[in-house]
Length: 300
Image 1 (cartoon, rainbow, N blue to C red):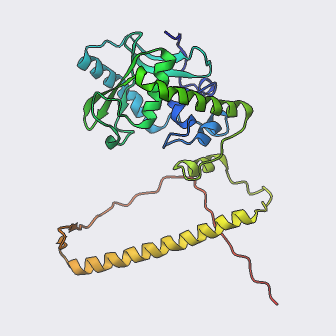
Image 2 (image 1 turned 60 degrees about the vertical axis):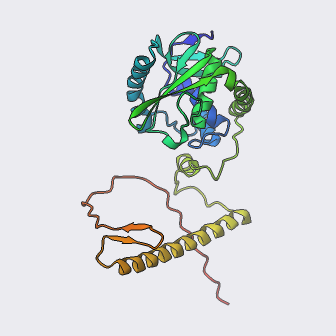
Image 3 (image 1 turned 60 degrees about the horizontal axis):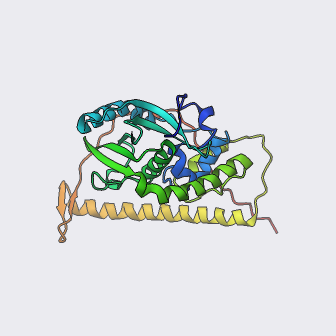
């Protein structure tokens, strides 16, 4: 069995020294919520990590409850919690285990608070969201386990899933290749290209670059000009579509009159009701405002 280490698992300086199991999917470019580019910036101290957001704090509070219910349902006693196992051959690769049953079995507790319930398959299978599958594969091979149990609190009930070492061997082999490439980039300070289509890229740009009013003007090339044109054109299309949508809504409301219910020939049901919001103050926040000003035409 791999060597376990008792450390401050959430300390940023510890997490920057390698790749944990929760980093695995992002390092492999397979995490839908965190890009490889953001992970690189976190590991190289260029942006603050999101290890302690609200969702993660809530998950930590639910974890002992889920583990306790797992033990009650299965009769398997949790011997240790929050233990890190280092990979026997790759010192920069590790996995933190929520609960250790014995040298063959580990437990990773999850909650539907963070995952779409539709992404989970049949109970007692390894049909879990891909980010969790990558995490469990790394836990299996860093900890030397034969199975990782995944008790998941979904829809008010605990469902049990299982990821087995024999089924994850091929995946982990590819993961080692991808994660080695990523970690070499961290060591050599060669960032991966940003994934402009990834849902977290805009947040990364905001975290990476502030606004310095004293910075000199930047000369941008024609390639950026093409993106500016696209940005403006898409903005105009969005405004036009929003206007079209409002016009369609007006026609529908006029046809319904004062009725709260309407039905189409297809059977589609329309409902409407008046929504009253209490007055409230907007919380203080900071955001990046991008405006584009066209140059004035030169007089002939």
